[in-house]
Length: 134
Image (cartoon, rainbow, N blue to C red):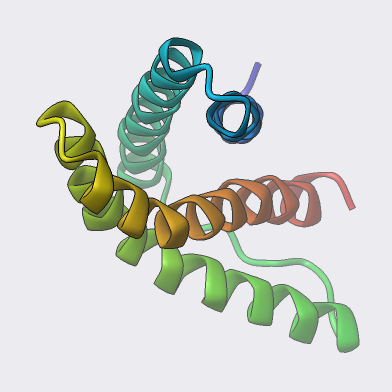
């Protein structure tokens, strides 16, 4: 598996764990929610290390398409990049509040963290697909 494919796999795993964690908390299965969200944090951290290492060694990859598809790609990439930078502190704060038992404050910020994190994970897969599979 190439490093970009591995990174897409980690993004997919994170999205699956986020989805499961969401379903578990809705069903009031807090123990399963905690396991899924902790695994999602670990998976995303592994992704970040792998991504930064790969791009430090290989540089950036230019999108090969042109026209409207390039415009679409750049729009997705731009929103993904901005939100990927923003999601790191959100995840850390959300995780910290849960770990400290501040569930009221955890739930308030998790309402923002979860959809942004899911968007970043899913668009990461889409970006991989557009760069390497189209």
